[in-house]
Length: 292
Image 1 (tube, rainbow, N blue to C red):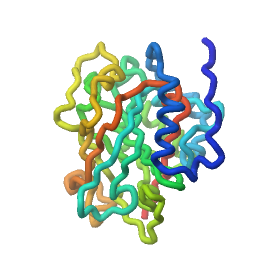
Image 2 (image 1 turned 90 degrees about the vertical axis):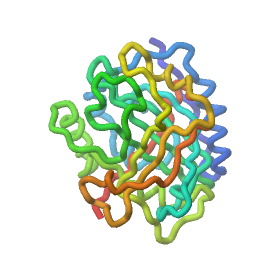
Image 3 (image 1 turned 180 degrees about the vertical axis):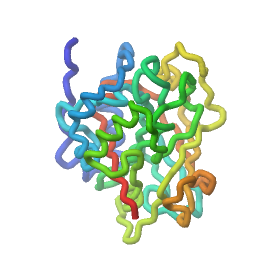
Image 4 (image 1 turned 120 degrees about the vertical axis):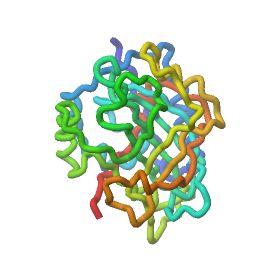
């Protein structure tokens, strides 16, 4: 197989562009031109490749494009769409939690579903003027949802329970080289500045968020269809998820879901596109969790 050519590095002044300029460039000059003519097969989790991945880069790199020769060992294939976050009035959270018009959402599976479970995940990038983007990732769980192939069958969250099964346990051990909390991602960066790049002196952010699929998004639960083709049927303007967060006084509790309230909606602003750039070079940071 011929290795796909990597995209050129982003412009040196890219971070100083507006959020709208960044989104337009990534979409028009990177994602759309590299759209697949034929979808590649979904890949199994590459445990050895994950072990060899410099995970500190995943945690610390504040950029929208991967370093050169970056290889995804997990969530190798997915689809990307433009999205916006429509915040509800009165949310106590700051920065991008107050709303963001220019975002990219990547929906993917942990690995080939026939090899294990159908395990949906998301990576969300909310762009800001003249500052690095805010990023978060969320999963249904470490073990997925069995043989239910409906991508929107379950909620996703930035925190998932620890699982003692061999596969998830091995992956957690790999991530423990760079974080004490491999099943949790921190949300502080999203609250530190808004989409205009205005920095917040006293940021407020939830410990855990939940992405509740819109009730009308129902794909077939039976195997035999590719979730990327399912996503292509969604139309711009559709609400994808209700975003919920737990109140401040529940931070750190084991079952925060029962306290969570809606803070906004994730809305689709384009078609979903499966592309080489979206799979190999669009970068989403995982911020290390801190137990405050």
